[in-house]
Every structure is written in structure tokens, then in C-alpha cells.
Image 1 (cartoon, one colour):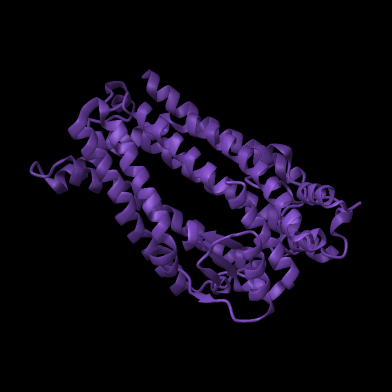
Image 2 (cartoon, helix red, strand yellow):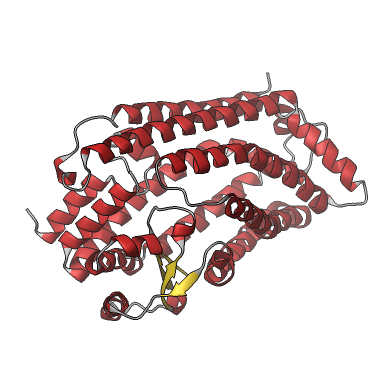
Length: 417
């Protein structure tokens, strides 16, 4: 049997089995008595509701993962990728170069995956989220969100895919370096234009009204010499009752975005504490470190990719009749799975550490640990989050520490007994 085929199937099924084990173990930690820390925040009925939400979303995720794993393995063994390649070549003809043919090939595969995913998204949004009181998305919004996402994927993703094909066609062995530089430049550019051109496609951003909250947020920003473009509210309630807050942009073009649902449910002190946490990420240079980490991993990926371009054994594993640069990019993704898996674990470990550091900064800068703890508790209750995830679930999937551990660390740094 083809060794590449054995390795790829092992990676695909192995990753599925690991996730299945982790999610199954996580379900065993969902039930139990409400932790004392959340008494007065979670009433017994809502806590039981959070347990049901955990079970239902977990089982749904397992079903979805099972379906796509089965489809992927079936497509590999049945020669599905070769069929798509034959269609792409017949549509483009011999006159079209590898870039155009590659875009058609990639577009067909991605569009097929998107179509298969739509029923799962519909069920998650309009059945599960609706059942637990989160959903506010209309079918019209759902459809237009999809269309906009596809347009962005075509423009940004298609641009990076085309550039990569062209560089490998033109520059040979050094092409990985040019591809790395070009894709990095596109990604950084996208980060800068996101607040202005991308995010407003999906949500409405309005300047925060004058008042106590805006004054308190701007006061903290001045105190910490944190340059920003402004404070905005985002109409998150248009899609969900869940709450969040985030920053976009770099330097003086940074914007604070608060979900309208967050503002409606939290006090001024709680919201300022959340802002202090986000400022902590910038003060501790977490954003820059994450960007550098991402760029470094991207460079390594392109370098390894250069050794598998038009690899005969790899194409034989996918039952391909003809070799091509564009198909090489797709097939390499299967081989890169374990490397990406390891780097994802490393990134999550770093991210959890960064969250602790940002929490400590928030306590030091705003000096109201009780308000910060209250904000975390409210967010947890509002979003029906799991209070006691299994350690393996945290290790493999959590970018933030479990809320009870965060509260314990905040109490320690804030001198609360």
C-alpha cells in the first residue's frame, strides 16, 4: 500500500479519535454540584441548563466531526480529488495556466465543503442556539453572512492561493521564501483594513455615547498611555444574546469594540475591568508575540511544503492522474496536520499564560479585582460556559484558562482572601 496514503489516513483518523476521546471525557466533568464560587450567580435551573447545553453542543460537534471525517476518507479512497481535477481541467482547457485552473480546482473543493457545512450551521444556529435562548439571527442575515464570507474568501484566500502557485511556478526552490513574504504581507494588510473595510460588512459599529462609561474607559486608556481611535458599540444582539469585547487594528488606529449585549448587562466598573484586561494584552506585547509566532509557523509551513511539490507518491495516494502545483498545496495540508496540531497545542499553552498575565495587569491597573471577577462570572453565566472542563479538554482546545482558575489567580494577585 502507498506509504503516503497510510500516513494520511492515520493522521485523519488519529486526530478524529483524539478529539472524540477529549470530548467524551469532557462530558463526564459536566455534571455535579454548582461550585461555591458561583453561588448567587448560577441558580440551580440555569446551571442545569448549562449542563444540557454542554451535552447537546458536544454531541452535535462529535456528529459533525464524524461526518466530515467520513467524507474526507471516502473522497480519498474513491478518487474524489481526481474527479474534481478532471472537471477543473475540462472547464479551463489547455489554454489556461495553472493559476486559473488551480483557482477552479480549489473553488470547487472549498465550495463543496461549504455546502456540506451549511446544514450543520443552520441546525446549530436555528435549533440549538434558539433552544437555549441565544439566537437572534434571521435567515436573511444568515444567508448574507455566508455570501459576504465567500466573497472575502475569494478575494483574500484566492489572492494568496494564486500568489503561491505563481511563485512556485516562477522561482523554483526559493519560491517558498517569496510565498512566505507575500502571504505575510497580505495577512498584515488585512489586519489593518479589517476595522475599516471588513468588520463593518457584518456588523454596525457606532461611537459609544457620551457618559460615565465612555469617560471611565477613556480615562483608563490615558492613564496607561494607550493610543486608540475610539470606543465603539457593536450590534452583537443582531445575531446572539452572547456577550464579548475586543480590539481591532494597530497603533493609534486601534478601536475598542463592545457588544451592545455586554454594555446592557454589566456595570461601569466591570466594563472598565474588561478593557484593562485587553490593554494588558497590548502592554505585555501579546499581540506582537502572537503575530511573530504566526509568521514563523507560516514560514516553516512553506519551507516544508517546498519538499512535497509534485511528489509522485503523494499524488498516487489521492489517485490523481496528473500532477500539479495547485493540488500539491491541498494534499500537503494532510501531511502537515500533525505539525499543525503540535503548534496549535503550543499556541494554546502560550495563550492561556497570556490570559493570566493580562488578568494580573487588569488588577494592577484598575485595582478593582472584585469588579473583574464579577464580570467574568456574569460572562460565564450569560454564555452558559462549562465551569469544570476536563484537563485534557483544556490542554487540547482552550485558549483561555477555565474561569475558576482565572478567578483564583485574580484573587491572589488582588490580595483577596
